[in-house]
Length: 609
Ligand code: FRU
Image 1 (tube, rainbow, N blue to C red):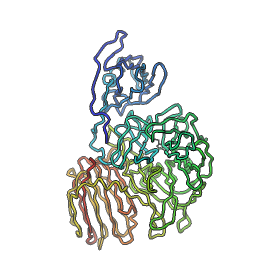
Image 2: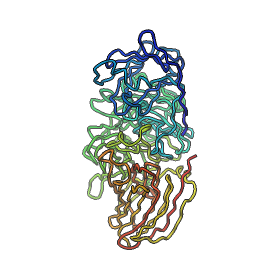
Image 3: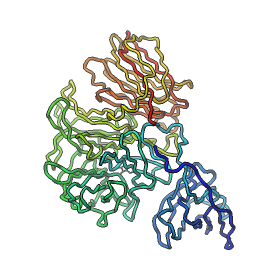
Image 4: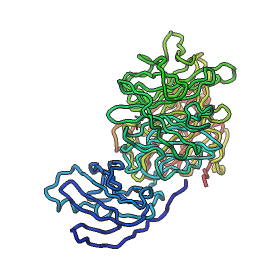
């Protein structure tokens, strides 16, 4: 991951202003009352105003005033008693102008004197650099994370000219949900991500920038230019309305459409996902009618005028919580010419293991209406894309090459995402995954998720390889590297259950148990390390294994604070976060009720240099 700056240089001398204002570090501070302070930027040409944050503190409202006009307002937990970390406000675009921050806090104070003692006033400064080097032991090595600040859903993902663009819900001014804009990282190999230092779409008069999608307008239907990348997102303020922005430089900088919003409803709707329908030659938009637990389907010739065609989902699938972040795409059924449509429907709460999760429906789409397949009881089955707790807001890249349907999810859960034990940044994405459809022995179609083929390149060397090992009650133990991929073929043979345990010297462990008769693989993280930041974190998740003969092939990816367990053909995946105090260093295998055979075990080190 490219660091855009590595060291922090403190400039400017301490000067006491004649007006009683306190001037230092390139700013002049004037306290106007117990809850109101002006910060004038005095250093000429500094790149960043470094804002000190204390996460537990109330949010201050920071009005950024440029040459006397309100440019925008951000909310920041400015530090009171201690500085947890700092965030940068980019001043470059204000070069040569007068910048004043009018800051209002909500804390109760008895005097201005008390307000003056706040840690933020001594630590706020103008600097030419901002340090993004990693200071977190849980930051993954080969999963995408923001350089700093809060991240939730992946947004507006597309592929163009050899580059994968991954935008994301981003708060650049703190590691909790607030100030939502679209950050963006790009990659040529889905492994190494380069993050743009500034948000590509910033909150504006219509509100914060919530989730949405991007598509390439090959026919210039919207009039933004041939091959313009057009982003559609939810502008969220008192209401949620849908807006457009476009890029003529391949998706690095965006112009906000002056005619926004392009779609309004009388009720909460968000996360527009649009694509060009090759059959009907028009744009299709699928929009989450969040509180109504349904997805709305619209069509348009130009992305600006939308006509409602149908709705899908009332009373179907998991209905708790709100429906969010839809996606709709066509896939071939493995090994056949049959084509089916998949509708991804993220919901929160109400996920299979509590909190947020991604369910999906398989069916047909005629350009206007999605019709779900029924199971043999004539019902619409509820199906889950991932059987872990930490997989949400999954959507696909548009315009991916070779008819690929590549998705990325947010690797967290709304139940505890703001509480996880990291600070400099919060949240990572799942590994990119390829979607497919397979028919199982029960006659039904299911969506498969395999790690994208690019991910094979992170394998470095074989750390351990064994084959045809019988395991019983006595554990067989193997050392594992801190970050690794483990490949394993389990033949349960005469056993009832097979246990795969990851542990460290601190006695913390994750236990995966394959229950042969039930055909289920469970994942127990109740004693996996730091679990007490939320009562919802210590949990057991379990997945059906879809194995016809009882044997299962696993690919397990460990990356400091995440474990993704894939069936090698993608027939299931289970994604869970873990926060071990020291890295897991052992893999133990055992079997109960008889001996099992580990036909194959390979442990790979990972190299992402
Ligand atoms: C899903 C979600 C979306 C919304 C975004 C706001 O996680 O709630 O529905 O657009 O997050 O950050």
